[in-house]
Length: 492
Image (cartoon, rainbow, N blue to C red; front, side, top):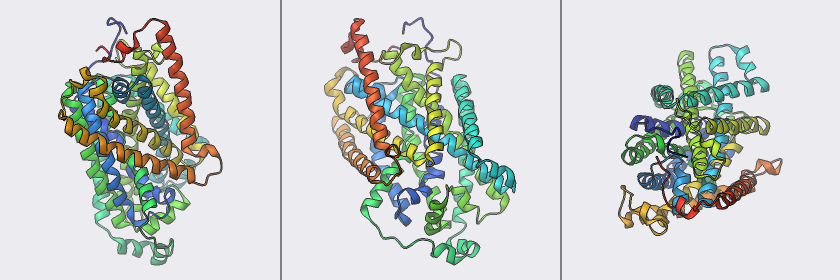
């Protein structure tokens, strides 16, 4: 865009960037996935926490790759920018379109999943009629849309509104999440069986033995819980002191969230036997707050349910910022309609890009409702992000060869040996996780082919390829020097 046009401004400090990563990571990934995984990966049983720890390993390598690339390319669009300048514009677009599609769908999934938290909240208050009403299909969809578009409007108002919304939600989430951790460690399985009944707990499911394929499938799915730090990279065009703050924020986010995940998941399974969790997961959607409500006084259950709702709500503004900046970055480079790179002159936000991302998230809400299982959206996101993270690791490997000028601007882990130590294990682990995840998806028994996430994802990639080549041809025909354009960073 011409320099006279309104542009993004660098207003996001270290706290805002870190909150963006944390709030993109904590939500359904901690309150729902570690427990609903008992249905999605039958037989994982008592091995959820070890699978969580195993999933953190490739996530750590991916985070380090992001941090390296962010230090050299602090602009909006993160993953798109990194791959397009390190590998090829087509791969950059495919990686980021995959990411945009997967995360936008999950924004819709989260908006849809929030409603059962409010249902449980009202049930804990003994407002049974209202709780029952929230299970009504049209009302659940309507509330999901209202929640989603409220945060779309917050994002459109500018970075200051965004921070004033996000940071208090993050603080409140940690405070109320701490209540869950304390409550979980205050009880054990014996306490739970005294309340619920030994027969109901012990006889619900058969004992399970450790099984590597099951364990790896669970770890590949739980990897989704560590997705979110990439949101920090997408906000690179609005980060203050970006070469310093972007890598720091990525490190702080993944360390904070990793510790919180482990304490939270262990606390819930410390109080609630996995057999009971597995049995309940086959009957209905369950949450950490709902499981602990068997043990806690009504007032404390209400507080924890409120905390769960807050954790899910704070996912939305951070993830909307992330996906909208991808759209902005594509449009800025001319491989998406340039009108989507327009920045509001007062708010300094890419409002059209935000609206487009909100529209895709709306499809996620409708898809979750009609599919009847929100894990379809989660599976699509995991496939998308594994591909994206894999390409980020390859970008670290190739950048000095493909684009030495930009590679010389790396200020984190500048040693080539260290970069190889990060990139090569990352490529191997992420490739393995991708194969495991796709295999699990294709072997799953579903009622229709479109309930497999892999073919849906491939169809999206075909569409993305058509969009790219159409826009690429336009750039060539207009006389743009594409080699020069994609060998340097966009202007500030």
